[in-house]
Image: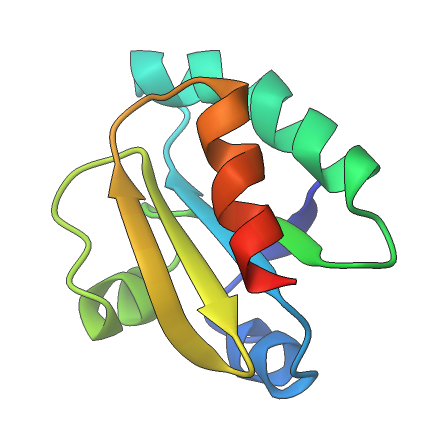
Length: 104
């Protein structure tokens, strides 16, 4: 299961320096609901190798503003605490796996 990412814990998670995927979503977003089980599967598959989390855009405006999140779902990929890649919109699981693999 993906971890809950918030404005309060985002920086500390990033500071761990592990590869990280953050799914920016909202409960009212249809494509986000479609991506949720896929993100949870990725979290289970990469447990111990990468952090996989979900950030609710309605509850965490600071992090959204920092990364210019305008559309959801948006997936941000971090390597060594730095933004390495971004994907906007729904996608297939294989695409997310490929992007996470590139972080490892």
